[in-house]
Amino acid sequence: MAGKTATGQSAPRLFLSVDMVGSTQFKARFTGKDSADWLDTFRTFFTNFPLMLAGQVGFEFLDDEGSTPAVDVWKVMGDELIFVAQPSSPEEMTAILCALLRTMQLYEDRHYQTLPLRLKGTAWLADFNGQNIEIDIPELSSDDGGQHIDFIGPDIDLGFRLSKYSRPSSLVLSIELVDILLTAKNREMAALYHVGSEELKGVMFGRPYPIFWMHLADAEFVFFPWETEACSLMAKAKTMTPTPESGLQQVIGDMRHYLKKMQGIEQPRMVLG
Image (cartoon, rainbow, N blue to C red; front, side, top):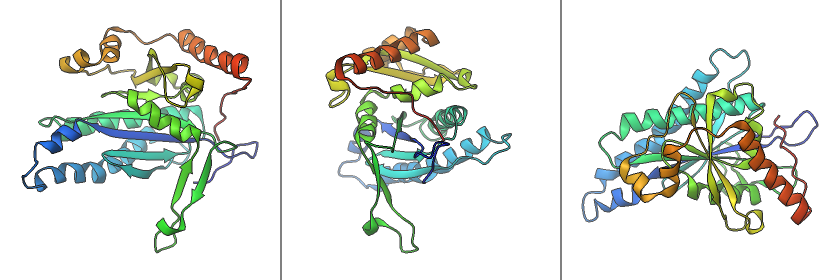
């Protein structure tokens, strides 16, 4: 998935994580029973969700004169699917995020109506012009010559730290992703919320990191009563209206100011391909 920006630099990659909520308790139901009772549920997820996502991405770009962007499975971790893409513009990135949210909603409606399972998502960007690297792992490459590419670096770690604050029916987004999304011409497709700030281990020198949630502009958070009772962030978000663009920009600007003033680090906006 190599790609360059107009300046000749490596284009940032978009990472998308989709994880099951309630999977541990669900599997525990079948302790000592036939594993086939739960295996089909997980087999269906890993098989069907990528296909459904590809279909929704195709719908998003049906009227686009350009090519449909590829959203590839990067890896599977436990009950989590992680995808990677290289959006060529803020508009393309926004459309991919909306396609992911629609897929999550459709999948839940189709497969989890009678099961105690839900889906939650995380989206973040990683820049490969310095602190992050991609490596080819020959031992994991396919027999037909296909490469197995892995990604390593602090931006990758950020996504896994941030996923702790993902919740059902929404995506949790990184600062860099929100910063670019605000410049997109189709930005109105997304509803964005700044629901708080939390310390992420090894991120921002210990300063609390803004937690941004996104759902589709024509939708709303779908939280069950027992979910909002157990999670203060969900309870807060349920009563909120989308955060104004000026408020989002203020949060991003404050973090950039902190990095420059206190850590001597300039963090310009990422440039997509």
